[in-house]
Length: 151
Image (cartoon, rainbow, N blue to C red; front, side):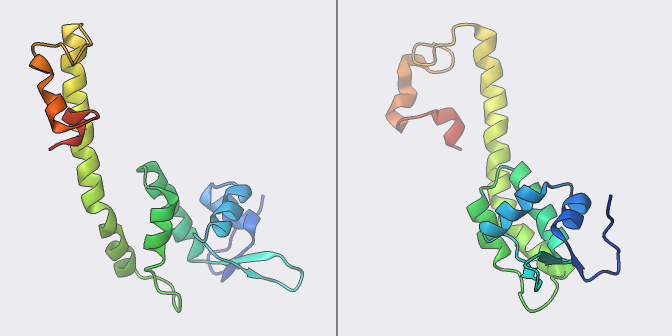
């Protein structure tokens, strides 16, 4: 087991994998997708700068929130390339998720509340349900799960 020294300026793919808890194959994938970068030694081995550890943590957290990799890549591109990102830099790009997360929270709350109502009634037919959707009036609002996608 290798350990990334706290004062090391760079890490190998194995050291970064161990420290981040992300498989080396995932780190190579992130690199191919433009989410992280490395430099190559004369022996063609990857070397990652220390701040890559924070980038990987940001990627993993964003993925857990359901944010697509393309969106994560776009936001990471807002970080400075010429220096290690500061706490303020991370806070600034984290704000990019706020509206999307608020919208997702509202959608999940509506799903939870409407799903409980539907399952509670037992009919499971929203187009005929006299309580949830009398006369299929939601069809006038367009296709799809209207209660979930409308505010």
